[in-house]
Image (cartoon, rainbow, N blue to C red; front, top):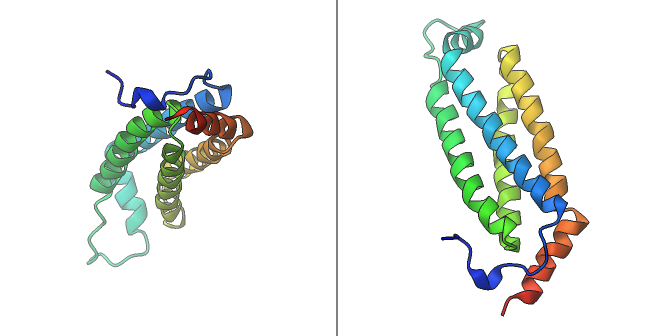
Length: 154
C-alpha cells in the first residue's frame, strides 16, 4: 500500500531532477546516520577535544543523545516526505527544504566547537549535499512536475 493518495499521483513520468533529489535526501540521511555512529565510536575523542581549555568542573555535553535524536528525526521525516514528494505533493518539497535547512543549521553549530577533523569533514560534505538537494528540489523540471501534479488532481 502506498502512503500517498492515488488521486494526487502525477500522470507524467518522474523527472530526473526529482529522482536525484530523492537520492540526495537518502544521502543526507546516510551522512546523518554516519555522523551519529561516529559520535558513539569516537565519543572519547569528542569529549577530549571539547574539554581542551575548559574548566575540569564542567560536565561535557551529551553528544550521543543529540546525534541519535537528530538522526532519527531526519531519517523518519525524510523517509515519509520522499514518498509524498516523489508522488507529486508540492508541500512535501517545502517541508524537505525546511528539514534540510534545520539539519544544516544544527550541523553548522558544531563547526565552531573545535570538533575532530572527521566531524568537520562530514559536516562540510553534508552541507554540500544539502545545497545540491535544495537546487534539485527547486529545479525547473521539479517545478513543472509538481505544477503538473497540482493541475491533474481533482
